[in-house]
Length: 192
Ligand SMILES: Cc1cn([C@H]2C[C@H](O)[C@@H](COP(=O)(O)OP(=O)(O)OP(=O)(O)O)O2)c(=O)[nH]c1=O
Image 1 (cartoon, rainbow, N blue to C red):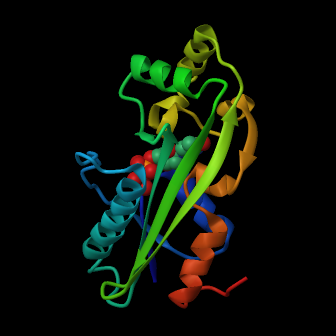
Image 2 (image 1 turned 180 degrees about the vertical axis):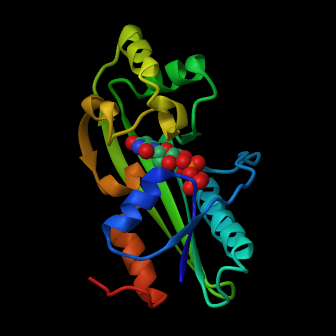
């Protein structure tokens, strides 16, 4: 039995896409970045905490279970951008991304309680130039609100992306190839 410790509809959709049966449970953890924490360490710590919280919260579902947690951040100039707090925050983020290359880090952890395996996937995304009025119009669509870096490559935000180098599914929130590899190692799916 696999528990997806996530409230992200994108992660559930992506996991369904590779045909792995699972049950969803939301794992609430404190997502505050620690002083001096690098984006790499931060995203991996959160994925692990989500997996562990999901494993602990699902004790009554099945004894023999795996829990999967994931976290995504947008990284520019070695700084992690999470979800925007408000319009001004989104404006600042999207102005920084405008006309630039940035990275998207997604970490995934699967735990069996005793044993845990993790992966960190880094993808490079390039944005076209954005004007403040384009950003404002984009904000009004409601799409940026719950997305790391204030955009969704799989949605309207896809029109701002000129290039991507790496894993598309990792940018959306769950790298499918690497997740399947992790599941294989934990013997739930077939290795590619
Ligand atoms: C960059 C980018 C992020 N995102 C999303 C993926 C994640 O859902 C979200 C980043 O926030 P996360 O904190 O990684 O995840 P979440 O709070 O949505 O879900 P949970 O912690 O319960 O698993 O941004 C997109 O959907 N498209 C994109 O192009």
